[in-house]
Length: 338
Length: 211
Ligand SMILES: Cc1cc2nc3c(=O)[nH]c(=O)nc-3n(C[C@H](O)[C@H](O)[C@H](O)COP(=O)(O)OP(=O)(O)OC[C@H]3O[C@@H](n4cnc5c(N)ncnc54)[C@H](O)[C@@H]3O)c2cc1C
Ligand code: FES
Ligand code: FES
Image (cartoon, rainbow over all chains, first blue to last red; front, side, top):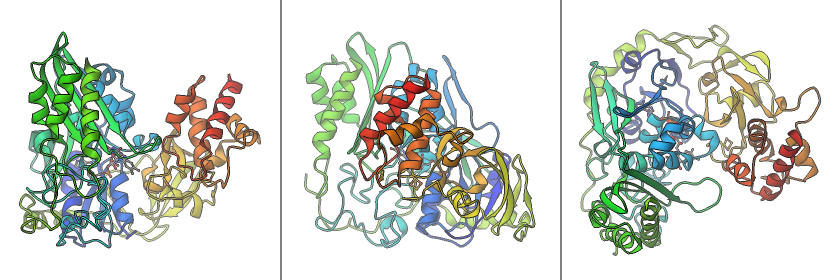
């Protein structure tokens, strides 16, 4: 690890004054003078240990007062401070009863140890886990290089990679929690150094690889996430989340699905269906949503919606297993709601 | 459904980021609070002193480990695992993957299991650390430790300290765990020797003894 200094931020304003870069900017075009945020630090230390992030200064935002609160109100919905840990979300009884898919997604993310440290802000801002991107020996597009190593049909180790929207970079987003957040139509509150604040829909927070190869989200250097807001559910809102992994202990997602529905009896009034580990950013399947809306929630209709979600899939050389895996996982998640 | 080998038509673009603006705007404030700190020159007080910059050189911090407050000289990049093993000679905590992926390095931070390899010693602040050395009390092994011996729940032993930390935390906080609870508590602890069945048995047996 390179040597860096440590700044203990006392407030959001203080942190914004100190910061001058983001993980995304530094990985694409490294400088020698980066001051970057660290909250739980799980992703930041990973990049520093790999030697790919060489910060001059780490700004610890973890202890800023006021960013670690969860509040739920039937009218206001759910507000989760950016420094709330995944463990705190997992053990919150109101989240379990009102936002079941989020509870399930958090419970299946990472390990008990990591959940005690990882924060929600850091989780949605973490970078993807493509092994070429994380390797100092592979100068890929996302690090300012001239190729995608994973895409190659013979040498590319692409079994965990994207099957949708994979025309540029074939990585999948690392946050399996964002799958559920997006399905709940969550929004991200971002404050900037001028003292302004903006609220961005989760769908607009993530940046597709085609739009900007250096970034996975819209965060600029002088910006900080302060909270994530989920709209209040109605009494007819139901949700479910399923994550598929390769082993019984913890693992990164191979395919995860979050479904949030407004139901009337056994009929779907409206649906929000998001796929994780499918594309470079969490993927809202408009096709699946349209296929199930106004329909009875049963096996045939769930299967039809699941298949509709895969019509645009273009698997790589080693990940065509993901197509049937998503079909069965989407179907199963929809049926959990019935 | 075939995907072509070749790279996309042109090199992907970088449009959103505005580095030049960032470069110009950010750096002046940073240097104004920089403090030069020689090793041992500065005490990192508890609770955390905010609005200050420390390092990059080593400074002396205080850390409460297994009930005893110790002074040690560490850099911001010193991981908690290294602070414990290399500075305080508490080598019971093992480092295996050094990336948060195996949990061999599990210690408690204010009673909660965390990966000591993935945090800075500076992250500890005034919180209390418990390591595997702090689990036995007054020369008496914890029931989980005894059960690990009785049930032969260790082979090469690399994962064992972390595994014990996870199981002790479960048993101390859940008086009546079932198999699923033990599996959930140890989901992060990877064992290359495959001792899981015996770890599960030992922990369930220890839980019965503690009620
Ligand atoms: C072995 C392993 C398995 C994992 N499995 C999963 C999984 O299954 N699902 C999943 O979703 N995640 C998983 N994770 C991710 C993990 O749980 C953390 O959420 C993640 O690494 C980052 O959280 P953090 O708080 O430590 O972020 P940090 O490392 O502190 O920060 C990450 C990034 O976010 C920026 N940042 C942090 N907070 C803010 C803020 N408030 N405003 C602006 N920028 C900010 C930082 O500058 C940095 O760029 C796993 C991680 C590991 C190591
Ligand atoms: S050594 Fe820390 S998690 Fe593996
Ligand atoms: S006993 Fe060998 S790794 Fe677990």
